[in-house]
Length: 267
Ligand SMILES: NC(=O)c1ccc[n+]([C@@H]2O[C@H](COP(=O)([O-])OP(=O)(O)OC[C@H]3O[C@@H](n4cnc5c(N)ncnc54)[C@H](OP(=O)(O)O)[C@@H]3O)[C@@H](O)[C@H]2O)c1
Image (cartoon, rainbow, N blue to C red):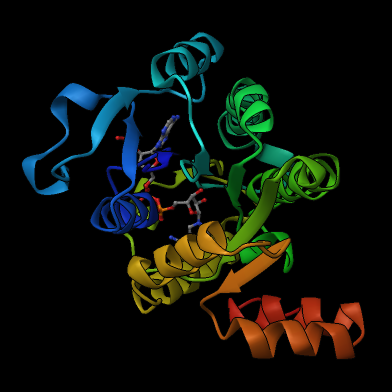
């Protein structure tokens, strides 16, 4: 009996590769898009069923869960990338980011959990970001949203694992998906932060362009799904093993300074 996997944001980057890999392995895959009827032919994977989902819209989340029916595996991958100095981030932008990257994923998962728990099997993967573990200037809203998602995941994992439902967070580093071109940006023209902001974005984009391919992240996500007892936390890209080891060994301020310097900021 093949398992059903719901992959949010299955039309690009990491989600596209997760959907491709799961479909190739024989899973029944439901992939989401805000516009499922207009998914380009080269992004449409044979066998994948496409559902509409806009995480920024609660009603859309409810309709997607309803349309999906019984789901064994959910990969909460879809997300918005956002940047801007704390002082200048519009409240509506922060609200939308948290609805999309945190509350939408949580609301979708809440609707799928009763079925997983009743069937005694479930896998929930939250796609976070290494930025949640290594905060970076002008990415505060994104950093905070990904940290919030990880918090939900780690707490829910303790609630759900006795029922055979395992919740994991996967934190990608820099991944070459082109996400930087879609990043929303909020900084005023005459902003006092403008020069540092532009420097940081330039470095960030360069890091993303030279990042690892999304397929590598998809392989980690699928290995988490297929583990008997998936781990609480995975990180992939940006030399994650070395970087996390250093984080454990070094004072927090040292690490923060190193992250800032890597993005052209002197602190
Ligand atoms: N790339 C990186 O370097 C990197 C690093 C760390 C973490 N991540 C995280 O990994 C995940 C995937 O990133 P990616 O680089 O693969 O991004 P991507 O290429 O931009 O793909 C994002 C996907 O999310 C969907 N999406 C966007 N806004 C949505 C919304 N409001 N509601 C529902 N779906 C929405 C898009 O689908 P439609 O446009 O078809 O709706 C698309 O399929 C994100 O959560 C991102 O934060 C990425």
